[in-house]
Image 1 (cartoon, rainbow, N blue to C red):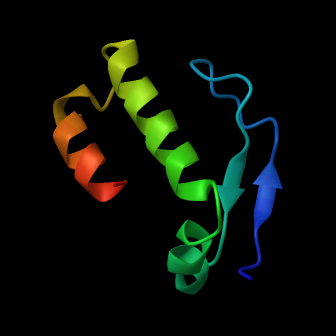
Image 2: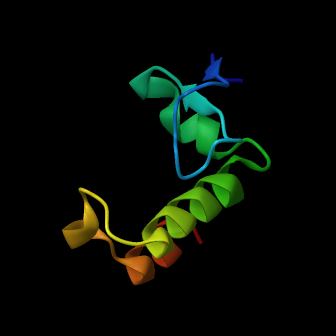
Length: 70
């Protein structure tokens, strides 16, 4: 199991009820294998893209997100 640090008050205005998870780079792939993490990451990212313009709007690609989080 990867060592995970959780911040339940990360300050996301678009999603106030989410927690930010952080892991060491070498544990990132293992974190995505933990049950529920991948679907939650997919939902958060797609919801943020659907929300509308952000500072990263030019790089929003729902089709890529579907492939990456499928």
